[in-house]
Length: 249
Image (cartoon, rainbow, N blue to C red; front, side):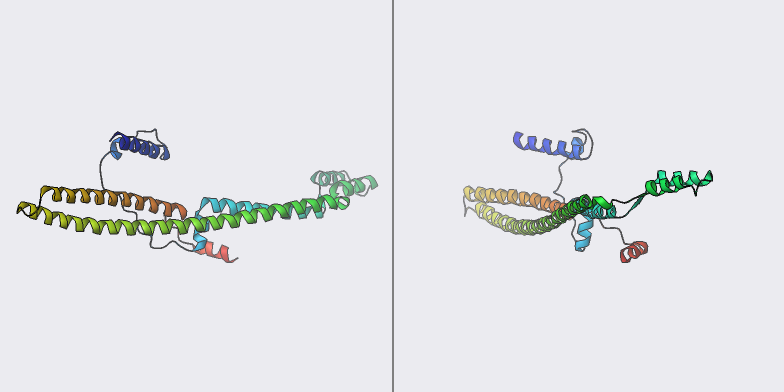
């Protein structure tokens, strides 16, 4: 059918774009008919910490939270005096020229080498408050990202379970209709049933077969949604002894 063929071509072009190749590159190989692939079984989804390490959106939110936390430390550090490198170099020049104990050299090194924002604490306090506000905002965004990730996982698994159950029920129905169709054809061969009954049985079988195929497609799509919600379908690399030591520090 033209409408189905148009959708198929669009899906194949989208897949080529996702693979980073021009549309139509794999159209020949993808056009070969085959069975709907079964998604691999999810033996274990890992711990919640594994989920936090795999999902890119949670990684970004966590890094933003860490950066906002670091900005608080930078703002607090303004309370403490700062040493000027140029002033230290000036002190070194004074030492090398033998003027270390000259009054002007000592005073210059003291003024330029040590900078303390003693009379600017109000601005420092404002910057600290701003940094803490940004940290609280980043923390709220991180919590919301975690909640959304949990929602995605729950919805994906619920959809996958319902789609697989539906596909299994339609498979059993298809088997029962095939048996009923054989009985109708046997009765028709003996003259006990009309051809219309056989055709009706064929129509029901086609309807159930079409619904089963659609359920299998939806089941495969639900499995993809599960892998996406989990941050990917790959296996997490084993934790090395050095990694364990770092986590325990």
